[in-house]
Length: 109
Image (cartoon, rainbow, N blue to C red; front, side, top):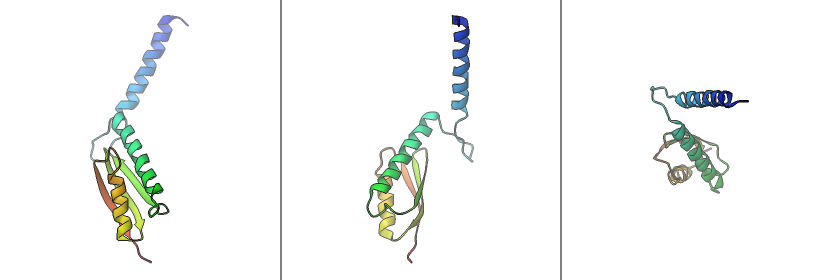
């Protein structure tokens, strides 16, 4: 393979990567996240889930998390107001979290 062909291949790969980055993650309201914001959100979501799983009171509960631009939304059911407050506090304590939207439901059976 000569240098000219290698340069064309590299240019093509760069164009593909740039195209993917430009089209990354859109929102219903028309706003979008950059590749860096998307990557940050994935990291935040992983750390929030890990914090919830590591807590002995929250561990077995099914709490779904969504993260967009550092805003964590918690969905699911908890057994008490204390568990709800604990889940929100754990999420808020994770590095990179800007705000926590609490959509947890307290269900007593």
